[in-house]
Length: 283
Length: 335
Image 1 (cartoon, rainbow over the protein chains, first blue to last red):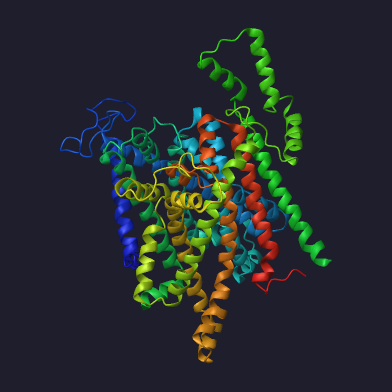
Image 2: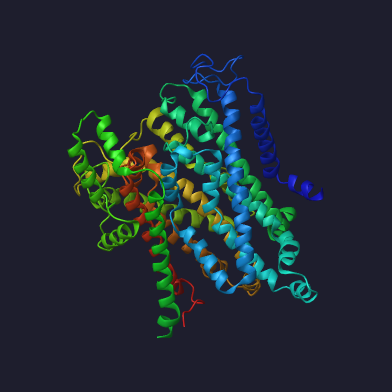
């Protein structure tokens, strides 16, 4: 509780927390949507925002507000799949490489470093082109997860490397603690904050990539996400035709999401780093 | 000699291993999926309405298979693929047939290089200078203001920022052109008129890259300087009466710069994959635009060519950085 109170002292944490709660509510609302998001022409086209259609309607004859609730939910699902699965990979690789050392470490880090060096975006483009038929929320999330763990594994590894040198490691080993138990019970708590902040960064990376892939037309356009909403709005020239309510909805939502996730991760990592914490409290 | 044996050779082996691994991945991804580019091409020809006799069809399939380097087993294709790569030949473009990938890239590359090298250099310089000053004078009001601005700009999705710039300066006030790398019909010469035209066209895409890249550099540099500033040797120098200019220039900036030099090398390497979204939004005729069209057409060879170039570019940038690092940081010595 005290941790939370300290965190809320940072205006960035408070703002991003409120925004994320708002976005979560919006995603939750999608379960009560009166329309099926995959159907077209369920409402009159190109209506301006009004009482009946809060955010107006688009040229496909869909209600923008309810469409946006699905978009937010689906983008969150992609980013959560990507974030959580890649966390599992990063933790496994980082802990094994850091704890085992030697050749295991060298091989794992070589694979990780190669992933860092290879232009991932182009690989995603190729994969997305080839897998377009089977592309959905889960496969996209998994695809991002498979490639998005390298840097975080490196961070965890270097943390484990330093933990391994501490006295309590020797004590635990001498008193007969197994490797698995040592790593899970003793090391995990230390790495938890790091894992959490990298999770947030990975999520916003995943949302951004989804949007980029959708803009260049490499997503399944029947699944509403922030990216596909933008793609449709651009496809129908909503800027030139003055349908600002259509293009602005995904733009504003993604802006809010990116800024909130970024501020959340910055405020948490500043809180975790005592040096900057002292600066902030002392200032 | 010990340098060569203990450092250079293992490092070079690693360099070639990474390139080999990356290119092998690029080679196998299309082959692991059910799509057949030759049949796709035939389908396209049919969709355009051309009718073919069965015999002619077989000939075309055979020709295309050979042309695309899809003959024989995967093993044979792989050997063939490397034989061509080593000669620097990326094959033919599937959809801008019979243009060679090399030629297409050669036309687009100067545009991207020009735009991105300039933008990267400017944003790196501005970001580091302002970030360094803001990190040293943390308590000043302008430092806090700059930090707040960077806090908002940093997470902005790039395409949104680029769209806003384009809308404001090309639609609302028409100061800059909406699209293109130079005026239509302008002949590339070394005249001032042509250079001015190119600069005018590349201003908005450049600005978008400089602002967003600058914000990142600003934040990192500010943090680095803050951390170095808190080191005890800086405190000691202050107490010892070393002049402030000397502390900032020789003690703080010098140490804080090191990670930023790594960052510069990495971003220079990234140039080869082009600024895809920049070029799409601003209709700039570089590698990104080429890539975009290749994606739209499913032009696999072209995408592979750009990807391979990009892999080699980044790994080489990092290799050069690693080998020259002792020049920047005298503490690192390869003995």
